[in-house]
Image 1: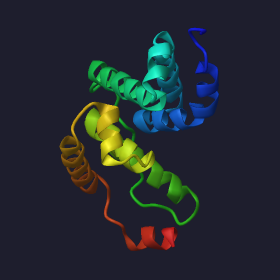
Image 2: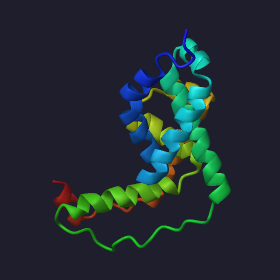
Image 3: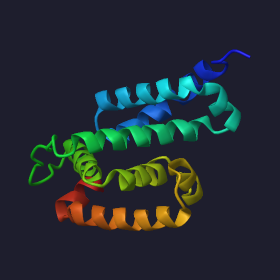
Image 4: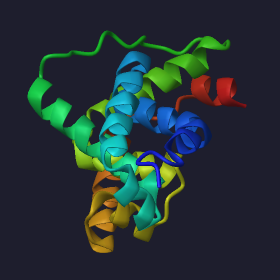
Length: 168
């Protein structure tokens, strides 16, 4: 058996989904590309074992979460977000502003909470799948989800009449 048998097919099939997850973890396209590349590089080194375990997708996502957490710890406080507009405008840019506000709110979450929110609500993982991907208990996932959502409610602006009209 070739050491990398099936790896190229895995990357071709799962690459876009992994890139989406990486973008949600980093909030930056270039950082997401770097994160995916680093995770796939690490996965390739252990591909035979990862493939034999039966969940290469979960393994790569866990590597991405761990890599992102390590980067965040090394660079904490070095990046400051720019100004967010005071009021959304009633055109397509309002949706962009909402995405920017949400991305910045996600960036303010601790790494584990951010990873849980991304896996649970963007990747649609169950509590058990998220716990397995992060190597923690289901109770930890539930409590961290609760804490993360409470923090997001605090960080995100309340919907205004203008926001509701734009969304409708």
